[in-house]
Amino acid sequence: MSEPSSCPLCAALADPQQHWGARQVWAFPHSVAVLGPWQYYTGYCLLVSREHVTELSQLGARRTPFLEEMALLAEAIEACFQPHKLNYELLGNQVPHLHWHLFPRYADDPQSRQPVWLALNRAENEPQERHRLEAGFLPPSESVARLQRWLREHGAPRGSERESEADGGAAEPQKRRGSGEPVP
Image 1 (cartoon, rainbow, N blue to C red):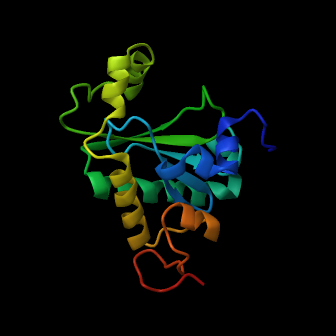
Image 2: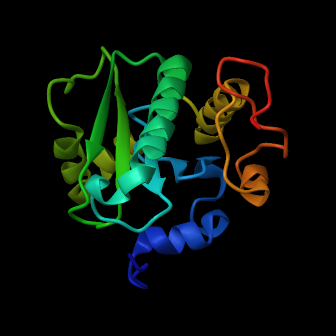
């Protein structure tokens, strides 16, 4: 599928440093993880497919590695921030480019039984609500550093060497998850 010039996620993938800067968590081979803006849900990330497709079913044989990358990101969020629950959301109604929202939910969230989108809709019109939802208990740089450290220590696969440097990693040999052996 061709990359439409109007797709904001395709534009961001073409120049991740310009669009995401220090919020880029990890450049996987099939996706890019980015710390999301709503850090009231500390550790909230987006996982953006490198390929412009609108539905998960369109990835074909690339679906499994993409979902493995999402599972690794989820493990990192769970290990780094210990949420009560992790919500996974794949929508695409506003931006028709495959991307997942991974929202950590915490036991002290007064709206824990409601979808986050209700609060985010209020934030569009209420500056005070927007500020509340953008603030987390950690600075974004610390959240990104924790996630990067966990992913690096657990041998998460990377995209290109240039991207590896952009998400805080040195160009080091990839290792199989759970072992110290290099990936062939």
